Length: 129
Image (cartoon, one colour):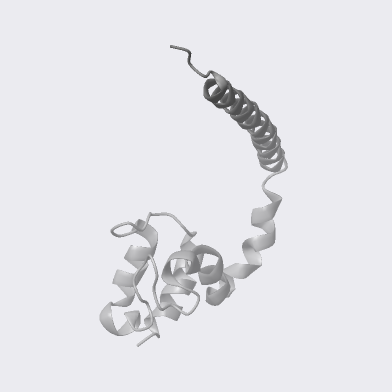
């Protein structure tokens, strides 16, 4: 009984080729991750210049919402992963809104924005009714 080994050779060759590709992609990702970590460390050493640039945004609740909240609550406050906020001012008091922003609720994590940004967001969202 003679067996054909060609299918086994093809499978072995494909496996080896796949392993080489995965290794190559992994090495490139590792270098990208190391570079990102180095950039992060440089930013921290330089005193977080990015935060200094964003300080002017604390007066604009729409900009704060766009950069911190819109990914879950939608660009138009219509909801998404997070709840709809179009009428939140009629449902919650300002204190409840502020507490939710600062401490999170459900799947929403705490501490997404600074206190002054939370104050601006609270006033803005309280007018949504």
